[in-house]
Structure formats: structure tokens, C-alpha cells
Amino acid sequence: MPPIMLRRIAEYPVLLKRINTVQKIKCTAKETGEFVKLFVDTTDDVRKLTKYLEEQNLEYYVISDKAEKPVKIVIKGLPINTDVEEIKNELTQLDYQVQKVNQFRKFKTKELLPIFQIHLSKTPNIQDIYKIDQLMYMVVRVEKYVNKTVRQCYKCQTWQHTSQQCGMKPKCVICAGQHESLNCPNKVAKSEEEKLPVKCANCGGPHTASYKGCPKYPKIDRKVTPGASYASIAQRNNNAVTDNPRGGKSKQEGSRPPRDQEIRSEQETSRRAEGVNSGGIPTIEGGVQNNMLSINGKLCKLI
Image 1 (cartoon, helix red, strand yellow):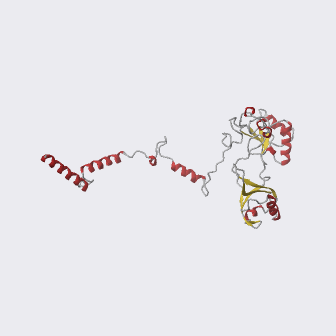
Image 2 (cartoon, helix red, strand yellow):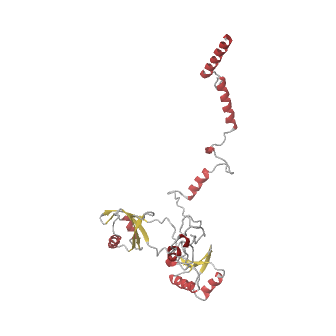
Image 3 (cartoon, helix red, strand yellow):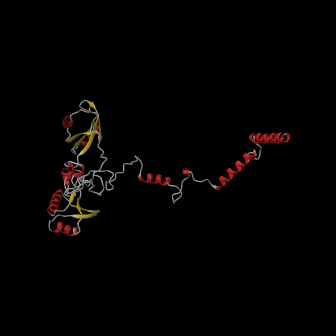
């Protein structure tokens, strides 16, 4: 069973004892940040415990059970003007239990996209949905929906649960006030002077609570390397570290060559100036230079 997240109170150990001894609800707890996870065994205990917490005016929220969550897929290949009800009817005829059909839109322009999201109940044939390649006489592709954002509650503005499972006090997404976001005074303000300053309900910064750049916003690591284990990636990162533990430049960054290489370079430059190679044999360039010097000396004597 998923835990019930209780906002920590000073006397929560006393509350936990009362839940077990007085309310006769078998419950264990685990601290996690500003919340306490409450664990029970049955869905009936979940209902009893949440009702009791509401009676005590305590803040909590319930994490959804994975077994109760719908299977979300996307269908690509249908015309952009396809009716969502037709999609629902077609899938229902194929013996799938459709909860909801949405059509995606562009984030900025809100224009419709030819991509449809389907919420399906978990049935014995649910895995067969990915084998569908034709729907409504159109060639389609069915993919698993991958959520690239963190679920945020519209009521309290925290994460990992929905407003339907939230027993927290409401906070406005715009001004962090103790009211629902729909009732924000800024939405009915007639001028900019009447509006309240924008404030985050999570960090107190000058932005909305839904701003993904908020320091409190949960970070998602999308750097996935297919077919690579954690050990191989760690070893690769270790090999990329330079030998200098103090952060000096690596060889690739233009580190200074060894002293013996500098000496050889200086000797080579000296030989070239003298017109000989590394074996002491005069070079063509050196011979030409010596002849020119000899001619110049004779011309000077004649003058």
C-alpha cells in the first residue's frame, strides 16, 4: 500500500500511538524531511486513517497506488481533426477500457497536434495495445506515454500527488496566498497596482509555484545511456579525470611539455641556425645561407 504523507508535527509520536491503540488502526511511520510517512495494510485502513486525520485538522496527502493508476499511451498517425470520441469508440470495440482521450497541443501557440493520449484501465489484454498498427483505416504507431514533468498538486502546490488526494491547506500558485488558485485576487484585479506580488508557495521566490526553475522543483535526470551499466559509466567518468588532484590542466588542455623536450627543441633550433642537421651534416638551406654570407663579405671588401 502507498504511504500517507503527514506533515510533521511535534507530537506525532503521541498521535501514532493514539492511531494504533485508540483508533485500532495498525500503522507504522517513517520520517522523511518535513513529512512523516504513515504505512497501513489495507485500503479500508487508508480510508479510516485519512478520515481521522481530517477530523484532527492535520495536513496530509496520499500517494497514488500504482495498481490504480491508468495505463497512458499515445497514438500517432491519425489526422489532426480526428474526433476523440471516435477514437474512444474504436478502442472500446477492440475490448479496451478507455477512461479518457486527450489531444496534445503546442505549449506556446496552443495549436492542436496529431498526437492523442489515451488513458486505459489495466486489463488482461493491455499489452496488446502496443501491437496495433492500424486504427480507423489509418496506419498508426502506439507508444507508451513518458511523462517528462513531475506531478504537481493544484491545491497545495507540492508534488507527487493530485488535488483529489490532498488534505493539505490550499496555497495559490500565483501569490502563495491561503486560497485556491482559481480565487487569486490577481485574476480580478483591474490594474497592475491592485495585483499582489508573484510569490512561490514552495521557496518564497518571485515566481509562480509551477516554475520549473524553482530551487525546490524536483529534478529529473534524463541522461540515460542505453545498454550501459552504472559501473561502466562510473569507470568512464574516472578515466576522464586528470591526474592532477588539485584541478590542474590536463595534457589535452595544453599542459607544459617535459624539460627534456624543451632542451631538444632548443638544440634543434640552434642547429638550423648553424645550417646542420641532428647528425652534424650541413643542410642545403644551411649551405645556401653560408654561400650568401661569403658573397656579401667579398662585396664589402671590394667596396
